[in-house]
Amino acid sequence: MNRDFDWKPLALVPLLALLVLPFIGSASTWVTLTVAGLAMGMIIFIIASGLTLVFGLMDVLNFGHGVFIALGAFVATSVMGGMADYTNSESLARNLLAVVPAMLAAMAVAAAIGLAFERFIVRPVYGNHLKQILITMGGMIIGEELIKVVWGPQQIPLPLPLGMQGTLLFGDAAVEKYRLIAVVVGVAVFALLLWTLTRTKLGLLIRAGVQDREMVESLGYRIHLLFIGVFVAGSALAGLGGVMWGLYQQNVVPQMGAQVNVLIFIVLIIGGLGSTTGALIGALLVGLMANYTGFLVPKAALFSNILLMMAILLWRPQGVYALGK
Amino acid sequence: MSDNLLTLEGVHTHIGAYHILHGVDLAVPRGQLTMLLGRNGAGKTTTLRTIMGLWRASQGKVTFGGRDITALPTPQIAGLGVAYVPENMGIFADLTVRENMLLAARSAKHAGQFDDTRLKWIFSLFPAVEKFWNHPAGKLSGGQKQMLAVSRAIIEPRELLVIDEPSKGLAPAIINNMIDAFAQLKAKGVTILLVEQNFNFAKRLGDTVAVMDNGRIVHAGSMQALADDELLQHSLLGLAL
Image 1: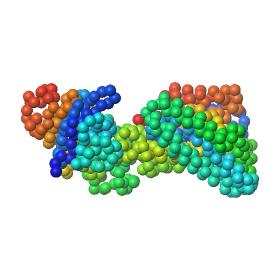
Image 2: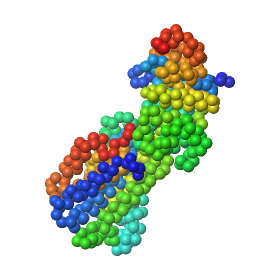
Image 3: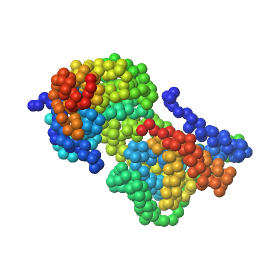
Image 4: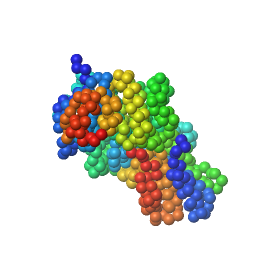
């Protein structure tokens, strides 16, 4: 990170966590809620990271992103459903032998469908936000119906493998194992994205394209190919996020993508459209806020994230990390 | 074979409902610096953007090195060896100066693969580029950004540089710096098409000149001839030198 980096938005995450500590009272409950919030935030970040780049690069509002989440989760039910020997083991290593292939399959299927989604649904409506919103929402509805055709309309359980169930005790604080795993996976995805974006020429092109795609083309690069790549990678990440979210909820429904969509857009608006670090901050804030208010004022849980978004936008109307377009 | 590297023949360009270029005929001789002059709104920037394929010619033909590039996509035109510096400079503000340069150097995967000799030459032309190498480009002053924009265009050898108003809003000292840089590029045999409103800048550098008005070329000839003819300058550009 260079010395010109704006650290203030990063401070919001510990600030929010410390602000609620007196209201929660018990330190152990606070630790449990904070880890749960960070885990939820990391899963939302995995889902949202691709979408923010898609918007930043091509100014495309993809309201159909949720379908890749649901698709990933349903693929995971099929893969893990056939690997009971591994999921019913108490060995984390054997559990991973089921979960990792499920994640890879979910990412591959979501990426393939993402490629078709970009070609047939998104590409015809470049430059027209209203049409993008309508057609991508339509695409999501069709996707949901196709999921019902393949897997049926009912809720399907996606239980955590045995070795990932249960809690770890840190003093008096009980932390669910899976939430720690979610944090680790989220940090790994963020590190990989950050490395790609800051240390590779491909990443430079993506960051430059988010700022001025016409200039990137004038330098001789085919931004459309770059966009397809980012769209496919974003879909794959949404598929991965879908597996994580499904395991977090321990069941999947065809509508789960639409349910998470709202949270994703709140995250993107808070973070600043097109900013990966902004998406991380937004996702962590949303995850923490949902868990804290769910404990303190359950009736306000749904509204709390909208309130958070409003407060952030009053401070920084373009989101915490507005891009220098 | 013609000695013109770039030619436009009867080029018309529409932007939405607006008809901006009305049959532009322009020739850019190889190895020379051609000035494209004209009042605000004459169609100079549209001409450059049409050459780069950023706006499509609705009629007419653009030829580069003997090849018809009228319908080619922008990246392909750039790939043929055309470097473009737009009026707004097109600097990636969130990237560092080094990262901006790396993007322009298509053959380099990382900063270690820059052509050292060429980079040193650029640093000698524009010391600010070296001084702020690892700084975010968005923090540079207007003049420094312009230096970066031109440096980016010349980080690798290109056959044609297409530059839109490089002196706009710059201090006289920086303008002199720019003139020195373009003079050195000319001496290396690079072909340059330069849009300019500053006639003093233009006459110090230009070999040939084309003057635009209302989307057409209304005068083309040698820069020296125009510089020597005040009456013609008045009639074409409304200049009071």
